[in-house]
Image (tube, rainbow, N blue to C red; front, side, top):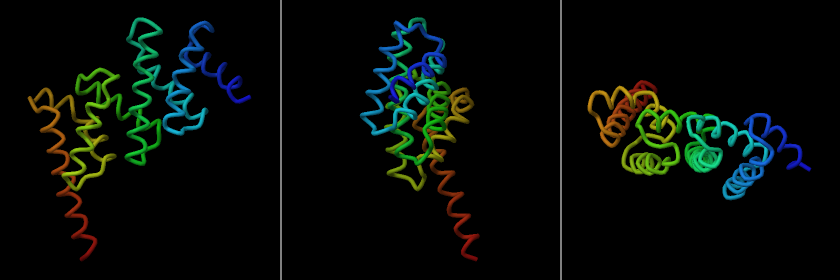
Amino acid sequence: GVQTCALPIFQVSLGVSSAKMGDIFSAAQEVGSQYGVSLDKVVEGMVQAYRATGNLATVQERTRVATALLGDAMTLSRLSDMDQAKAIDTLVGALRQANIPLDQGTVILDKWVAVTKKANVNLQTLSESFAIVATAANDAGIDIDKLNGIIAALAEITDRKSTRLNSS
C-alpha cells in the first residue's frame, strides 16, 4: 500500500539504515494522524525536518527533535495558511535566529499567537519577518518579545497606510 511505497523514498531521502527507519516512520505517521495530514505530506515534512536536525549526533535525537519540529511546523501551517514546507523553513529560520532549540518551537509559536491577538498583524507576516531579522535584532540587544512588538507595530502602520491609499 501507500506505506510500503513511502518507506523506501523516506529511507533514501534520509540516508538512514533500514533498522532505524521504522522508528522514524512511526514517529512521522503519529504526527500526521494528530494533525490529519496525508502520509505523503508527512513523509515530505519529516524529510525536511530531519534534514534540519543534521547537526545532532544520533538518529534517536534527530528523530525526536525532527518529530517535535514537524508538529510545530504543522501548527504554524494551520494557523497561518502557510504551506507545510514554508512553515518548516520559516520556523527553522526563526528558531535558529533566536538561538532556540529546534524542538522548542512552541516557545516562539505561543509568543507569535499572543502578538497576533493583541496587534493587527497576521501570523504569516510576523513569523516570516521574525525569521529574517531576528539575528540582527539580537545583535542589537533586542529580545524576542520586543522584536515581535516592533514587527507588529510596523505591520499595523504599513497596513493602515495601504488601506488609506486603497480608499483614496
